[in-house]
Length: 113
Length: 122
Image (cartoon, rainbow over all chains, first blue to last red):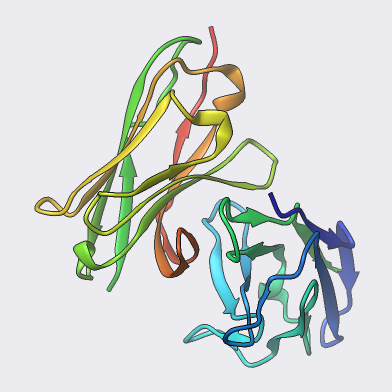
């Protein structure tokens, strides 16, 4: 199984500042045949189900604010929130869908400083 | 509007059984892989099982193989999870989710239900 490791486990950022979350996979999730990274990011607010933010490592899901962006390739990925808003307080998860079983990172809790 | 609504959760004793249901609406259910993902209290997300559009392919996480069965009824726009021989470590909120795209059998999930809680305890 591919192990997904996120860092940090928790993060406190001031309103309006940049937040950066890292995700590392135990093996590459880049498919050489199509040059796509099989990596998604989700946001989970307290008491709610996860919400898809980004897939293919950098494609924003419809309706997701453009302050959210994803980058990276191979085994190292980043989720960036360019200007933190109060409603962004949540746990963020990365997930690989390169191979079965699909696996998630342990989550990163983002709060306001 | 895509909607997924789980039901069937509740307290069950170790060794017991439970059947979860997920009612889907707002999309062509028969066109999508579907999945169950669970989340133990205060913990992260764990994929449990996937099922292909026509139900001919099913995949499970190792920890539930032989105990859980995923199924679907496309005529009723419904997804199911039959859980047998339940253990304390199966205690979790169980989410039904729609697959946005799948690589063979591994997918990302674009719509999720609200979840149903399954506590396994004596």
